[in-house]
Length: 101
Image (cartoon, rainbow, N blue to C red; front, side, top):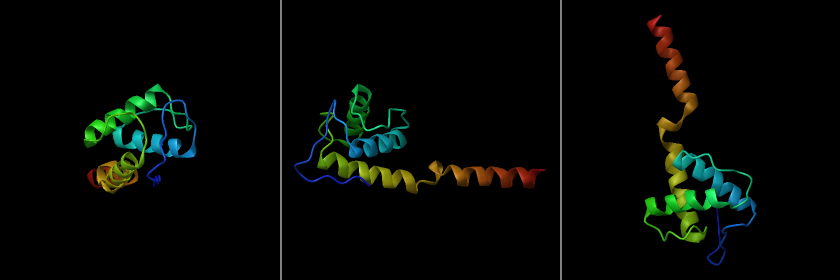
């Protein structure tokens, strides 16, 4: 999970491990393929703005405490959705194939 203090912000052209965490989360939640090396580039800004718009947040393209909290919630919901569980999907497909053969 991604934790920020109230006065901690990350934005364009910065590099940090928390930015990398955010990028990984955005890729999963938005089904994006932005970089995941911790560098806050234009594609990262665009993905973050998309997420902020979807969540009704201030769309400033900056990672702050409010956006981080929303990301955490959305990421938890994403992970708990069985449609995103690729191992379960593959296992079910395998079982269905075995039953039908």
